[in-house]
Structure formats: C-alpha cells, structure tokens
Image (cartoon, one colour):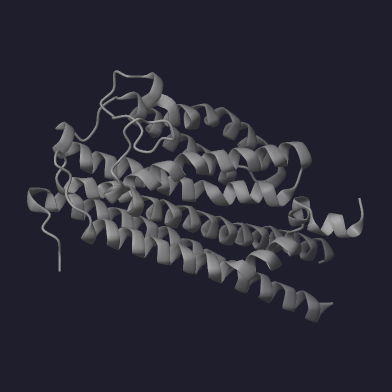
Length: 250
Length: 52
C-alpha cells in the first residue's frame, strides 16, 4: 500500500494525533449543525404541529422520544463496531471511542425511558409496564451502566477495553431486541415502530418532517459528543502515559 | 405564543424540560471534562519540556 493510500485510509484515523487534528477541524460545524437541527426540529414540532386526534398534545413528545430511542440503540451498535475493531485490530482510538459513546448512549436511553413513562401515564394509564420493548430498553440501560462501571473498575486500560468489548458483544443482543421487540412480540402495550421503510401506515407528514429534522439533530449531537469525548479520552490516556514516564524517570 | 396544550400541558412540558435538562447536563459535563484534560495535558507537557 502506498503512503498516499495509507494516509487516505480510514485506518489512518487510528493514529490519535490524526484523529485529534481532523476532529478539531470539523467540531465547530458538527456542534453548529446539531444545534440548528435540534432548535429547528423541536421548535417546529412543539409550536407548529397540530395535536393528534387520539393523543392530543402528547404527540409532541414524539420529537424527543423517537430520536432518543433510535440513538440509544444505535449508540450501542456503534460501540459494538468500535469494540470489534479494538478486539481484532487493537486500535486504541476505537476502544476509546466506544468508551466515549457509553455515557451518551446511556443518557439517550434515559430520555427514551423517561419521556415514554411521562407519555404512558395519560395514554396507557400507567407509568410503566413489563412490556417487551420497555423491558428490553431497561435491560439495555443496565448494560450501559455496567459497561461504564467496568471501564472505571479496571485499572489497566487494555484489559478494560478487552472486557468491555466482550460485554458490548453480549449487550448487543438486547440492543437488537429493543429494536425489533415490537415486530415479533405482540403482547405488549408499546405500539409498532413509528418509522419503518415497509410500514403501510407511517406517521403523517405533518409530524414526520419535523421528526426527521429532530432525528438529524440527535444524530449530529451524538457524533459531535462522541468525537469530542474521544478526544478527551485520548488526552486522559496521554496524561497517564506522561505521568508514568515521569515517575519512571524520577 | 405558547401553543394550547390542553389538559396534557403538564405532561408535554415535563417531558421537554426533563429531556432538555438531561441533554444540557451531558453536554456541559463533556465540555467540562474535555477542558480539564486539555489544560492538564498542556501543563504536564510544558513541565516535561522544561525539565527535559
């Protein structure tokens, strides 16, 4: 492989310096685009969409609940891919990116659970039900907590990356289950997917377009946070290495 | 120009307030730790350069 090919390859971002230099250039655009999409989507959804004929104004919660739930599952999937890259190719940046995404995914899961409970109280008559999707989401949240705790509990970062990578593989079952539970488990309270490529009846356009803008905002915010937090993890790792070198030299 | 949220006003406003608060805390905590690590690394690198 030539030097030019190496430099333009995706793997070149496994170099922490190149990762930091590249992400620092794109960060202002990512933060800006995320903020614009979130403000436009949420203001549009909150102020300029009508009430639903059955749900009333609670339909406006869709602009927070659906993007957060989508990101809760996809954050875990991103962590799975990054963990696999670490386990197979031993690129530290990918392990740190998975670590950086953990708290972001956990917060997205909490938002999905909280907004779902707040919506469920007037619509279902209960804050919580042991419904397949709700339960698999709660288990996914517990996996997020376990994942973050495992990173903190193990001193050696490579061992922590190995073990959290394995935990990520196991947790993927629940991430997939959370995504598809509504399709193959019909006994729950939770309705079918709001957004689907093959659904005969999707949400009406008047709700759908601002929802897409909100989803774009959540995706961009997730990318911005993961890039920024990965940079922080890279620096924290470098600090540990410098302190170890200083101690060895003393 | 607050929209009329009817009898579900509390429900909708609570959902928005909780979500925006959670997102704000996440962003603020990320930025705070990021700045702290950056400053710590700069100080450490400067000290190591000075001490050779």
